[in-house]
Length: 347
Image (cartoon, rainbow, N blue to C red; front, side, top):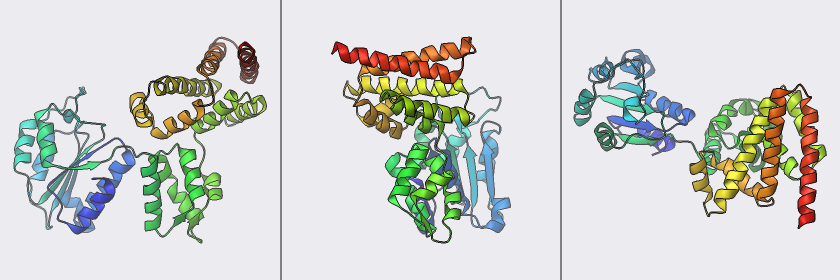
């Protein structure tokens, strides 16, 4: 189940004795924790909620707490965070964990305790016996990163719950400025609600005024200008980044990364990989893949490679000379346009 389904379940049904919140989206992990915290009345939380980090605290301490009787309350809540012993990766930790005791607990969970494992990982090591037992015993809550459509729906639902409305244009603008990253989208909702407090309606102009574009998003506009050989637009965008106190080497590194991604996606998409498969294989957000696929349709592999190699040369010059970054970028644009003209003549 997802976090929204978890919220509905906790409101209408008796909670399960063991939960596993699995996924790397931190804001969803926190939302799930908040829902579980709501199970314990505020005046009972000091005595009946325990939170334990497995990178610093032995598992035995958390299990002792889980087996304790609630203190003047109906139930206890015990949260076990970062249970790295459930993944394949080895952690250099001096803390020893008694997994046999966990096995015994999972076989006979304490009925008055809600034991929650918050695992901020992509996946667990399914070969481990304790993982198999946990998956069999626990209710799984999905906290993996949301795709674009899921992020849109969740933002709209959150705003509707607070009696706010967001226009389709405003939601598109928010998606664009955050690369459809739900964590970033969620982080901007509070200030948008403050701005729209009177009318309870968030429009595109509000989003454009309050939500800053990420460096990746600004650079994506620059990439488009470069590929279109629009020197005036490209130089203007590059200068804006410099005036925004972005270091030239960082700007160039992001540009190189964008063109590398375009080349990878063009190569793999020509082999028949779908948008979802590309995102998984390249380990990038599906929204970035969506934008990249839209971009590469109009440009040849040779054009992408020429831009990539030209930016590599800029990087070398930035590291080894004191030449003006704006001048280096201007020379790159001139050379890139000349290469494109030669390609057209050959055809």
